[in-house]
Image 1 (cartoon, rainbow, N blue to C red):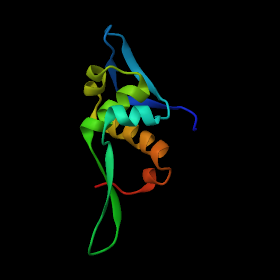
Image 2 (image 1 turned 180 degrees about the horizontal axis):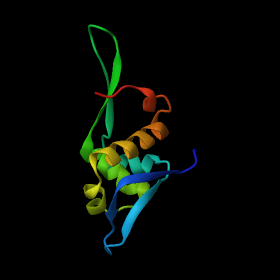
Image 3 (image 1 turned 45 degrees about the horizontal axis):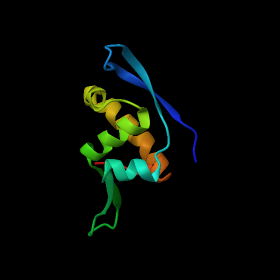
Length: 105
């Protein structure tokens, strides 16, 4: 299992007690976390070019972010799009070490 990753947020958020959160620590997901979150991404292949990419399911990834970062869903919903994607990329690195280098569209 990999070590946790800390992500510094470009836009701080608040927790349920209205405390400011400027960094989140992402712990590697377990099978239980994945089962709880449901589908978080899928690998897609372009038929004409054979290139592959990743399509993120925001609802599933949001649930997984909440579990792996120990954040309530309300705080996950406050994340800027850039921070959501930065955390998603960190999580994808845990799921498939080469996934974080795949171009997303």
